[in-house]
Amino acid sequence: MSMKSWKRRGQWLELMPGKAVTGEGDRQAAAEQWLLSEIQFPEKLLRQLKAAQGIQLAGDRLRLALFAAQPLDVEPRWADITVLYEDDFCLVVHKPAGMKLHPDGSREDRDITLDHAVASYYEMNGIETSVRHVHRLDQDTTGPVLYAKNTFALAKLDEAMRRKAIDRQYVAIAGGQVSRDLRKIDAPIGKDRHHKQRRRVSEGGQDAVTHVSIVHTWDKATLVRLKLETGRTHQIRVHLSYAGHPLIGDELYGGRKDPIARQALHGELLRFNHPLTQELIEVQDPWPIDFTQLAERESSGVEN
Image 1 (cartoon, rainbow, N blue to C red):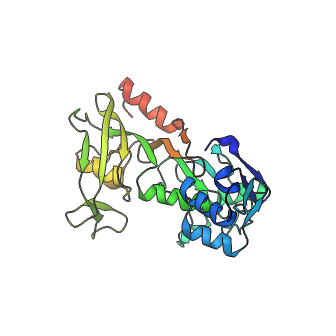
Image 2 (cartoon, rainbow, N blue to C red; image 1 turned 90 degrees about the horizontal axis):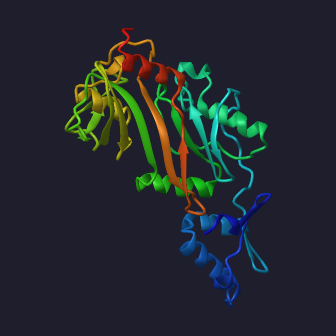
Image 3 (tube, one colour; image 1 turned 30 degrees about the vertical axis):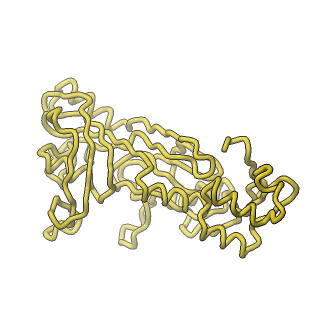
């Protein structure tokens, strides 16, 4: 479906399904069948919309109440955030270092999380929808985070995550010279019973696969790009530590201390298919200043 064949009118999404619907005797049934087959509309959501009179046929137009107002459900708390991509269905924002993704009920919940900041952004821009992130990033990892702006987008993007169809590429600076032969780390990850925050490679853990490519090798560090096949907690950090090359600044997993004062890990690319049109959306997130400065120090051989 092309981007031009839909319009938003207030709470309604307006589609032009053509003769597949308008030429049929039972237009309501034809409309539902068209939504299921052409848009892969989630069946559960279709039933909910139908029950709430959220499906209308008017002439050659099919209208769906996809943008009905929803409660924010996260306290709006302002923080300066960078929007990398936005339309009526999706929002991608940069998560800075040191910011948690969402409130977790801990004592530090006084801190503003990315979800709080997105709630504030929605409120200031008159976007009446719930705050729903589709994937996660560690507190000290920077990079793009994808949010779904309505229940349809959330259902489609959650399904894409389950199918591993959302492509996330990371860049990291690992300690030592990583061998070019290291292309894939396939090692299950489980909890470390000796340390509450830490994870470790363990036979009884969950499957975890990380793909590695070498970008630059320096005297004491290596710039690597990584793609995840799975999304385990701390996966890249655990896997590179397991391979003998913990990330610089990642003291939790044996990385050397550095002025970056966090793991040298950044999500630089996010690719996903648009929930409605299936158009490929590619969002790049430039390296943050602290990561760039670390790369410059390592490439010049300057001692910290």
